[in-house]
Length: 199
Image (cartoon, rainbow, N blue to C red; front, side):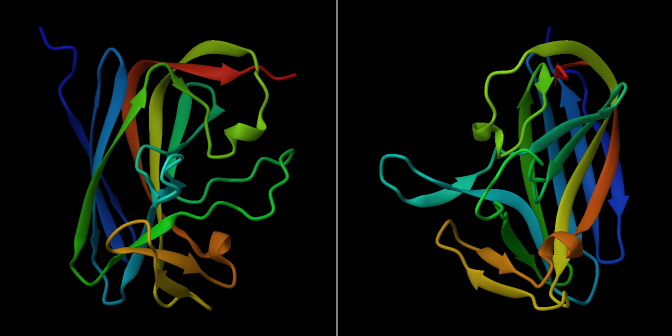
């Protein structure tokens, strides 16, 4: 008997792009596969990969498994690929910005994300957190979000990144305030999660 349940699908539309999502829940992980298509006339940059550095070779790469995971309300989780919010108690010299994948009109990109269960709150700034107590809960819906920006964003600059072919470093006057979301609700049944206990 397979550990993986049948895949489910969802769609998300925006003025510039659309996203098709397939997901399945196994005993050990939540797997999300998504395909984003540029449906507009203006190029877009999908912001779903975080930069990384190989600790041995110091060669730049990508962290293809990174995602921001939050538990914003009862029985709801949020999984986001894009600009991770900086925690109010964490000081950083500069926010970690995702790399952009450029899509011309009608071009698409497809990627997968596997998250270990129980799903736990996480971000790229977790290095700044000391050990915390966790409490178990379950959710009935996962809001899956992928952020992107359009080439027409004010002050946008995109330069080829050394992290991988077809990837760009993105700058803009107000990048965090200019990103656009593709969001899809993913119904689940009693998905196990771990929440940080409030102090």
